[in-house]
Length: 411
RNA sequence: GGGGAGAUACCCAAGUGGCCAAAGGGGGCAGACUGUAAAUCUGCUGGCGAUGCCUUCACAGGUUCGAAUCCUGUUCUCCCCA
Image 1 (cartoon, protein in one colour):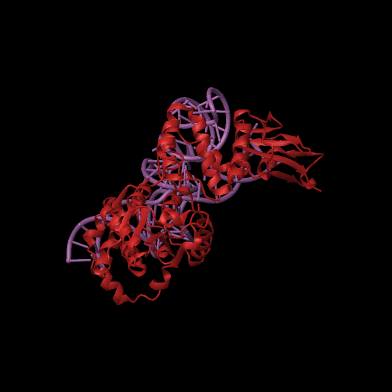
Image 2 (image 1 turned 90 degrees about the vertical axis):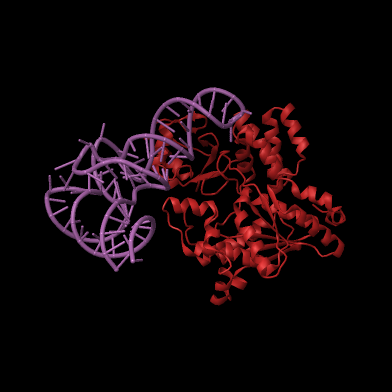
């Protein structure tokens, strides 16, 4: 929170301790220590770089791991330099990808950049952040300059990378432009004269490329600090939107809370470390003595509170307990309005009711849900997909374990 | 530039004239169990007021009573040679 000023005078060793939390690797730690001391002595804050490519509209908790680290640097008095990769997004980062990223249109990039900005502002101190778009320099970059930069990187060096290796050996396509991605990212570092660059471990190669390129340009090579890739809700794969195992920062309090409660116990420690500020000794201890469910509930509350505030977190917890522990209906639920036009003698086709409520994408899907016993109306399980049911104001439609809607008859 | 292989549903992958809305696995959804845990087990997984009909096997045509399957062209990918 505040107290930023007080951190400034923190001994560098202690700063390092704070910064080391959750980190996988620092290249090199001595360098970082030296920079921190230098910053303290000269009063010149470090320029800490984080690049984000606006390739998808929403950020999720996986992205926040690195953003939180950046925030820590800010709290220690350093400058966050957030690079919106509006130009690199056109290329698509091949890191960790098993195929070429689909091209993203300029328009989408623009829209995404805007939402990124909003969503990131919940985590970073925007007052103390410098935000730049890399189209600023790439749009103007000459081909000659590109060749000059590219000439310093060998193909063998680029092809060392595991992701390219794999694609190569599996005979999958690799676009020429993808080979240039690390060079572009390195160029970003040069352009903003970064002291430190943050990234996930999948960014290691790109971060190190930045060091080499800065050295070639006569700059001090940046310190590369890597964070773990956050594991998704399934506990196996990395958190990603396309895998559907994610928690978006714009998810509602209820969604967030529920998603966290559904993670495996093994994942809790990891989430505490990377997504909260709770001291390691505290959560470790809890896991030994408390019921895992309660520890998880605390984790869920902490995370929801970060994005929606304490009050919302408390409400989400309350609702959760009510619905899933006591198996009662939630107090508040979305309403669906049934137009009288859909009714025949006050009855509506059940399949239609389910699709109208948005609980099924098609009537075939709605039929399946009904057949599987997922649908109930006022706690009464409905199994006949051909049924027409009488509906009235205030009835509650439930689909699956967690989806509720209150029926209203419109005028 | 020459030769060869390939493109199947959300993903991987079988199918090489009718028995194919298309095996199997993954994922997802639902049910049981539970701490909404996780794990496990079971079912479902193109659309449609639906014991039938419609659309789908890269794209466009063609052969055939009938095509994911055969033919022609196009696009894209990979391999070998130059």
